Image 1 (cartoon, rainbow over the protein chains, first blue to last red):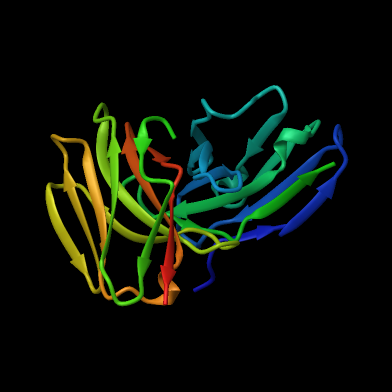
Image 2 (image 1 turned 180 degrees about the horizontal axis):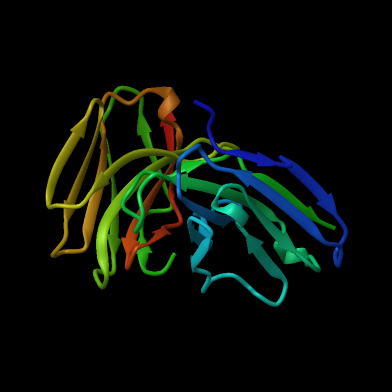
Amino acid sequence: EAGVVQSPRYKIIEKKQPVAFWCNPISGHNTLYWYLQNLGQGPELLIRYENEEAVDDSQLPKDRFSAERLKGVDSTLKIQPAELGDSAVYLCASSSRTGGTGELFFGEGSRLTVL
Amino acid sequence: GQNIDQPTEMTATEGAIVQINCTYQTSGFNGLFWYQQHAGEAPTFLSYNVLDGLEEKGRFSSFLSRSKGYSYLLLKELQMKDSASYLCAVNRDDKIIFGKGTRLHILP
């Protein structure tokens, strides 16, 4: 069974440029999460989807970040414009359970460097 | 990470036992996870505790006390491959919140 797939693995951009990350969850997993992880820190929740609905986006900086999960399968996270402080690893995770009760399966992450 | 506290770093010797503690704010609590994360890799699931008590899974065990807002991860017969960060994560009001992680160093 294929795991959570993310792309790109690495991205280097200059500040003020846009960037997008893509995530394909495990087949059949209705719950999808985007987390941000800085070096030496734990993952920080950005947004959680149940199917195509964003049920928790309270931590998403909506002035520059946006996300979508059309058709309730794969998802895209966008940053426009990027700032130096956005340099981090963006992790996507999926789960077969709702309400945060199930194991999260993480992708390998997209490492963003903003110059 | 939102009132989830765990030690930043720990060091232990190969073959020994180590206990990593985690304390958390109990409001809205629905369950507690432990994840392992090797450097440069994604976190992987170790355990999920909902009820009080100890759950054992091979060399790893996880304990939960809901009333005390306390959990620990116990690693036995430490191996060099156990060198990693261990993340405590709380299900709070259906939201999974991670602590900052404990970096565990294993000495030969």
